Length: 323
Image: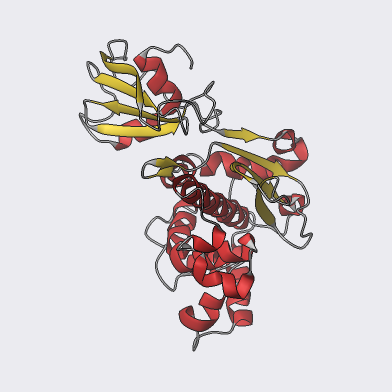
């Protein structure tokens, strides 16, 4: 475990935007007492402040499965955070060039040919709600390791894909996830908003892998078909995680994706049901049973939906700084 003072620990695991989002008098303010807890079984880290906000992440230099029976172990217990600057927040916060905890960029993301994709990612990671997907929710962190790369996916026609390391083995590592974005997305025919949709869609896949990891951690003797969110889709898809996750995203995450696309596009109030942002959000999900059976059974055809979404994306070509 690193030897950080409370303020340095908080700086490492808590973004400046998260601190400021807490509102006046909240976050890790001057004089706050900070507690840092690490769960030795999962390496989950919790940073809490007497100013009233709690943050999570993963402890570096920690090996999962340690002793302690899963009980959080104090690293710093109610130590005063006295080195915070005059603005009331932890010194430094997130630098816009730093990646969120647990996220690494493959060298391909920094290749000049892929600057358009990298630019979209840099903008996305500044949106608190996108960070929330990466940082997770509840008591279980979203994922321990996430790598983003640019290369042709296994399914060549796909614009992106997300898989755990060892996905083609009986025991894939659900805490080590790779998001792949197709290099064709840098082409002039792909709008910045389209790239944003693909990246967010893939991050949602990663979050569903984290849910599976959480389920397996809590139920080590059970299998994929026992997971409540996945079980209804096993008869249709077998153990095809990608298709199962598509059904889950279609059922529970489309409106979230819709709002994030509108926010990214500078139209935070535009992510409503039936909006063009929703048309775009359904990209990659039109072949789900949920779409066929429940969402749009008597509305516009899939071809019509696809046409309108593409027309909307075409209208965005050349309108954003990443073009």
